[in-house]
Every structure is written in C-alpha cells, then in structure tokens.
Image 1 (cartoon, one colour):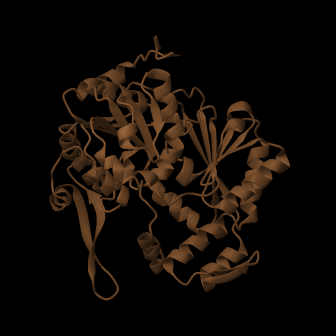
Image 2 (cartoon, one colour):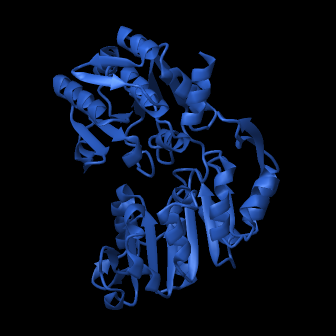
Image 3 (cartoon, one colour):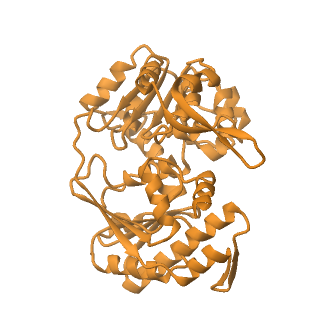
Length: 426
C-alpha cells in the first residue's frame, strides 16, 4: 500500500508469531523470549501497532540500529529517527526513535518522552540492576514495554530478576534468590564467607510467574521450525613453549612485548593471548581451513591483533574480507562475494546479526561470556538457513582454551573466580 509517498510492504505474520501475540493479549508489558531467528522484530513492531501509541523508543545494540531502521521503513508509515540530541518537543507526533544501549543513559531528556512504547532488544543487556543503562531504563515512563531476547539469561536464572521487575513483578531480590537460586557459602582468603551460585530450583514455577506477567518462552521446536543439522569439529592446535613458560613463571617476553601475570586478571588475559594471537600454530591451522573451502566463512575472535592475523591470511589467500568490530563494520564483501571471510569480534557482532548466507563458522578463540558464545552459534543456524551448519573450534592443546570451552558447554561464564579455583588445583 502507498502511504506518505512511499510503498509500504504488507506484513504477514507466521502462525507461531500470531500465537505469541495472542498469548500476550491484554498485557501492557510483555517479553518475547524466543530462539534466535523466530522473527522477534516482527512480533515487537506488530505489538507496538496493537498498543496504538504514537511513538516507539527502540533501544538496541549499536550493530542492530540499521536493521531496525530498515524494518520500520519497509513495513510501517511512521518516520524513523536515529536519536541523538533532538529536542523532544521537535519530534513528530508519530515516529520511531532508535538508540543504542551505550548512548541511551547519556540522553536524560528521554525521561520527558510521553505516549510511547519502549522496546528493549536483547534485554539480556539489562541483567545488572546496578548498571547505568539498566537504572536509566527503569527511570523511563513508557505507556507500554516490550522486552526481546533469544537468550534472556544464558542459563543464569538469577539474571531474570531485573527483567521480571520491568514486567511489573514486584518480588524482592532476596525472596527471588531464596525461591529460585541455590547458593553455597565459600570461604574467601581472610576468613570471609561469600555465597556462590551452585544451581537453580523451581525453574518451571519461575517461568510460570513470568508468563503471568506477560512473558512468552518459545524455542524453534515449540514453533514447529526445524533448524538444519549442526556439525561440530574440534581442531587441535599445538601449544608453544612460550605458553608453558609463562604458565610456570608468570612472565615472558614475546614479539617485543613483556607479559607479566602479576594479578589473576592479567594472567588469565595473557594465557588466552598466548593460546591465540601469540601462537603461530593457530594461524597456520586457520589458513589451512580457509584454503580448503571456497564458501562464505565467519570467523569469531576477541582481540584486535587476532583481526590483523585474519586480515593478513585473507590477503595471502586473496579472499574478500568483511568485518564487524569495535571500529565499525563492512559487510559488502559478505553480501557480494560467495568466497568471502567475515571476521566478527564477539562484543560487536555475536548478538543479533543475520548471517545465514554462510553455513560455516570458525572460532579462532573462545569468549568468556556464555551468552556471547550461544548467540554467536545462531548467526548461521537460524530460520532461513537450508544447509547443514559446520562449526570449527581451534583449540590450543594444554591451554586455558580447553577449560574455557568446557565451561561454555555448561552454559556458564568463565570468570575470574573460576580461574582462581582452577589455579588452586594446579
């Protein structure tokens, strides 16, 4: 249909998407916790239309801004504004405002916004109630609220307390933990005892309570969607003498750099880097993998120097390189070249990207965060993917990477605390 001088595509929701809207009928605050690829953007925009508010404020990751802009411009007649410092009084009566999580709390004038729907994409960003962005979101006064996430907790149910509060569930944090979280007192150096989470209880009751406050949980299986087969391959990488020496001495000079592991955090960082970017064997194995295929490939990595290694290998093999990282993004080679390599830094591109034109992913190094790991797996294995998905994990033998991957398999973060415990067992 034609509105305001532009053609607007008509939305036709799928059966399971209509089911989620029906399940939240009558709720003013809702959460759609659906597996990646089930079209939460469509569900949220239609729910906003049903709410009937003249404005919407979409808060998302920086990398997702363009996707939200394109969505609303394609399917709805409302003006779309990437919000920066516009005056609230100058905004059109009907419009969609889009801003990222890192910027939203720096725009206090948004507290004066009225008559709007607040859409929080990837609400897993709001699990820390002490974070500035979380506190700012709590200070807003929308008419209606929509939370979206494919991994609302990454298996860590203690993180649902803040999202439950946003939905209107006024349970205290103390009572929430008492009813749903299993803790154990661990003695710290100095004789202090601190509670450590060792498990969860009453999970079905927890989800029932959240459903009573407008939450919907849906997996691809629930939606009747069959995702393609997933094939995992661990590629063993030979360790280096330098890594073993640093593990023993906690100090080493390598590539003109002096690495000193005088704190737990630094030692963890350098052990990761010695297994990855300082390990020439890993670069060789990556080159071997890229030489063996002419298909699109995604590569996930952590550090800037790792990107430089990937870039250098692509130049040697004359492969087009696309990227998503803290410096920006360029996906044109991914879109235009069937033999392209797309390098993705976890923090910048593991969440929310639709990259199912590729069906192969290589993990140069693992992240420490289980949510980033789970989300990265879904960049290629999602609705719209018709091919078998292949994953290769480059794991340096006898290194910290083996322990990190084992922890990620349990859907847990590899934290400083866990590293300290592992150190104590050596």
